[in-house]
Image (cartoon, rainbow, N blue to C red; front, side, top):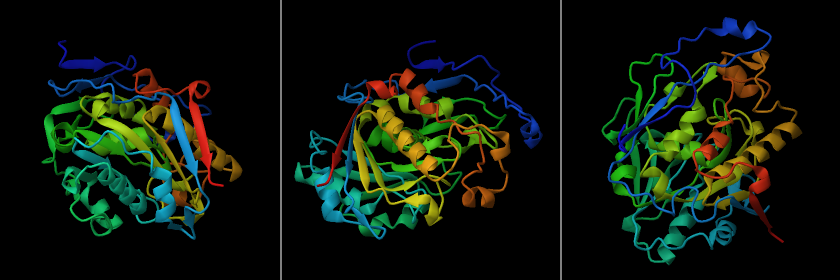
Length: 372
């Protein structure tokens, strides 16, 4: 193959997998199906940048926490301002995309207070409002979060697609191709605004668990929020989010444009993610994680969510107990011992093997800043 087309073969396996139903769950041990190869077509003229993932500070995660940053479920804008004051540099000549995560609104999504402060920080270093684009995949989720009404005038708010089958906002020449479950459409296309619009991306994920991938962090927010047709990667009870999440993040120009990650940990969803509205599973953690290395940040996030689940008596997201699997969504959303999929938090380490960052806790420089 030439340099424009290459295959990331994650293991030996057929490109078409026909999976059994829940009868398999009666077995004492589960043998999970192996993922198929994933064919990747990046943007041919894209030039890799040293600022892209893992960025200038691989392995470094700055955790900033302040108990006053969220009180009675309300985020304090002045405190968030202080928490973010050093994060905006070297963006004055760019069109900056801010990749939010409105999924889970209104209970838990990228806080408008934090997004406002990111915008303010960029404007303070000379980025005009017209050069700032807030974006995500689905317009309706952005509407639920009311971002258009809550953010700075002049800043564009863009939903990549209006409906579930709308592909007009995607570049058909930049895609990942894999057949996971015999689906008729095997390609996921990159958003045109990422491929051709913005020149830098600030990624603002939320700190949440995820029923299929284990956690929704920097990597999933970036990969699955940039490409379409991603729900096909997990069909209950199986998930191929590992390795697809990391593979998507490695595609140029997404990899080079994502230069900063600011994880919103004001609210931490420790079960029922990414869409839960159950307040019992949402902890008001009052923290931010900041860095250029999404793998290191997601590794710390996974550690924090695992800690909270242990405190609450919930099983690890690594657990693959067939008895924990339920086809009943209502049961999953109200019982922390149940899950819809065999989760795949290993997607974080897999992304590390693709060169996107550092997943080994011993090699991560985790700096903690606590308010006095």
